[in-house]
Length: 202
Image (cartoon, rainbow, N blue to C red; front, top):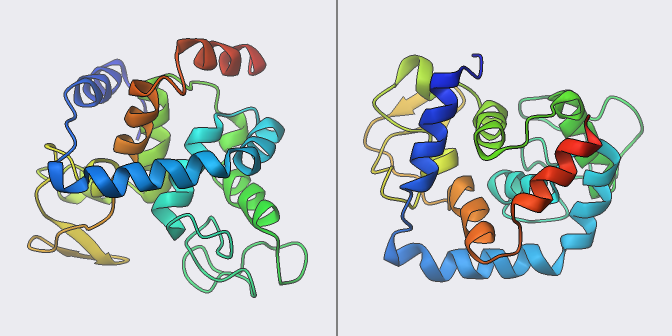
């Protein structure tokens, strides 16, 4: 799946028109507080890979509910190598792993260190890619809940386990886009932050 001009426009339009559902607001606020408290941990990893710290924090929320005792790959325990997809990570070293070790391995596995388009569209593209293109390929009528759960862009339909989709299942997670957009609207991140990341990657 390539980030075409058409897809960039789609992401931007969805981002601009994304509205958080009322019943999600409190959970979203609590998530943002937890992320902000641990900003330095995300920042330490992000500086090594020249990528936005809040993107890493968003993945952390989606994969392991901000639990620093879990792998960033998939939420498995840091006490052992991952047992779910991707299995056997990190390849180097022995458990128990630090969260930072695991995070670096997960992000490098996805080759995010070589990605330089950290605009809104570029970020949402990589966020969706991190979780997989199953929705776009096989269920195009459902926008990925990994991005949009809890917003006006998502109602139902999700993969309950790898490879098994249910039209009736409803994601209870706070979609990653809601987290990123809330940080923008709160003034915690802005266009200058994006410019700094782009300069680092130039």
